[in-house]
Length: 283
Ligand SMILES: [Zn+2]
Image (cartoon, rainbow, N blue to C red; front, side, top):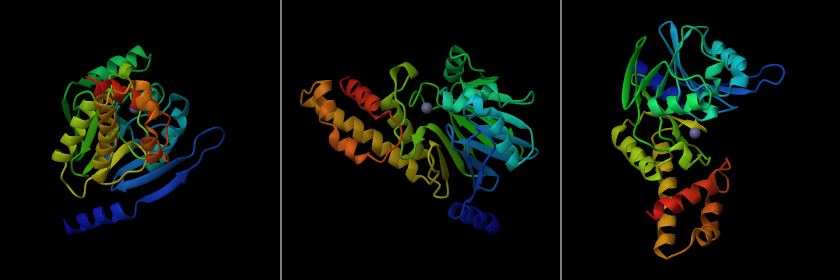
């Protein structure tokens, strides 16, 4: 047990990182082992997570179909084993477009009911296994639970918990140093998102927990707290603007302090986030 804890501590402090480059137009991925048998493939789309367990692999999110071959090779560089399960954290293209390219006959795709519906509407390959609020899979030696905490980033978000590895794959609920997408047509619910993160803070109290965001670098529980603070700050600002009777245009014009605060963040979704927050704050 002590050895295992030491291994966990070491892997927290010194993740093994290597860069995998391929010929031609293939993207350059960064592959990081964040904990024994748990790897993150970063670059060209959302984070893809690979869990090695028994003779099989479980993968969360499939990036873009056009890089399906490159992603498969990156996964094989971790371990040449069949992908038994592919879980989609939600329906955005950077998370699930690769469903058309990555799975083999042996792969079963898992997604929330709403994500599955939206994937099919977008002509993507849908799920073989769907769930509403919770689904537990025994995969090799690992117990994996998929959670849906209600509409948040979208109305079909899935969080994935690897129990023994003590890893939470947060999917679209957490982006690190990046503005997450927020759109009514995707079912984004800002208050629901805040509620979901409050629940995560309450339910995942393990200080050794590793949180893997949908975008950006992995970290500890602080990632949950930081995302919560970001959403609260945006919503608080817009509630204040509503209380003072500002129109949406005036509220957006006066939001430069917020824009300055998050000036280093990547992604181009902040204006959409601010507009949605103003609408939500008025209700
Ligand atoms: Zn997303």
